[in-house]
Image 1 (tube, rainbow, N blue to C red):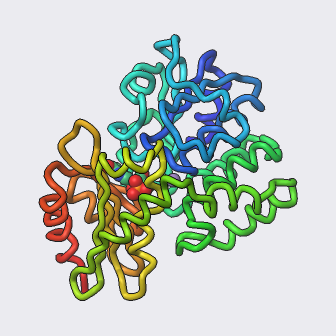
Image 2 (cartoon, rainbow, N blue to C red; image 1 turned 135 degrees about the vertical axis):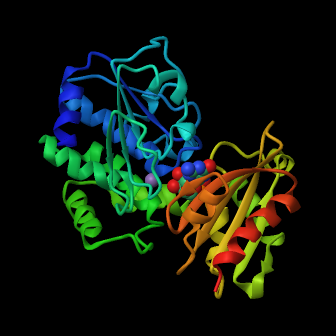
Image 3 (cartoon, rainbow, N blue to C red; image 1 turned 120 degrees about the vertical axis):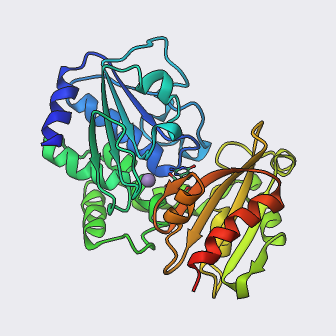
Amino acid sequence: MTLDNILEEIKKAKTIVILTHETPDGDAIGSSLAMKIAVEELGKKADVIIPKYSRIFSFLPGANEIKEDSSLKKYDLAISVDCADLKRLAKGEEYFETAKTKIEIDHHSINTMFGDYNFVNPVAPACCEILIGMFEYFGIEITQELGTCIITGIITDTGGFQYSGVTAETFEFAAELLQKGVNISNVYTRVLSTKTKANFELSRLASNRMEFLEDGKVTFTYINLEDEKKAGAEEGDHEGLVDIGRNIEGVEVSIFIREKEGANGYKVSLRSKEYVNVADVCLMLGGGGHIRAAGCFLQGTVEEVKQKILEEIKKVLK
Ligand code: 5GP
Ligand code: MN
């Protein structure tokens, strides 16, 4: 069984690196740090390499040990968490591809199975939720620190337990973590309710520019590099802007695009409410993701990118 192989590989490896997707969210960072703690509980050490992440996650246990890079160029074992595709893995070419053994743990519905061992559960609402079951199988005790990392991923990837992927098990896990002393209320406030000033300024811009299309079933908005500069935006300050449109009555799909530096194009974020499979829409555009949250990159101007996305969305809108 894959889990036995994963445990064996961790026990065998002398050097271990943990990686996750670029522009990491709470699930990406929570999963990486949880994996690091788990590896340590198994008596091993691991480097977590994440080149850039939002400072709202710097309170997490182990965040101060996150590395931007490493002097070690070939690890025995590389573990990728919360990433569907080698192309999206930050430092993937440098540290994943070169590792002797490659493990991938993920929950995206479209996954390229790029590891030697792939532990993928597309119905798990967060990668962190997969990790709980895995750690229990390994006999690792879920401590308060480990639980804090895990609940961060669950809270951010479920929008605070609101998305349809949440199951009774998710609440059971949360109850278990609460019993272990994990301060869920504190994590919730830090990672979901607190906005940076720059994020607020960007949301004001994104709201002002919001367009309602296709009889109000689709919203579109954008931010460019100049906006981010003016707002003094840092890594992660665009998070949540795509939700503004989705949360409006009657909207099925929210489109948010953000200019990508030096790439002549825009990073696209899509969210849907009830029936449009945005992972499929993004797959058609060269990206991927989950049924209700997906993304891709498109070259062109704001208007060109908007038209390309709309063309695909119109095919699936009722
Ligand atoms: P976000 O809109 O928050 O950047 O991403 C939403 C979801 O879609 C995330 O689960 C993310 O991993 C996935 N996603 C975003 N952009 C891409 C992309 O370019 N390719 C793939 N395969 N998935 C993406
Ligand atoms: Mn995730």
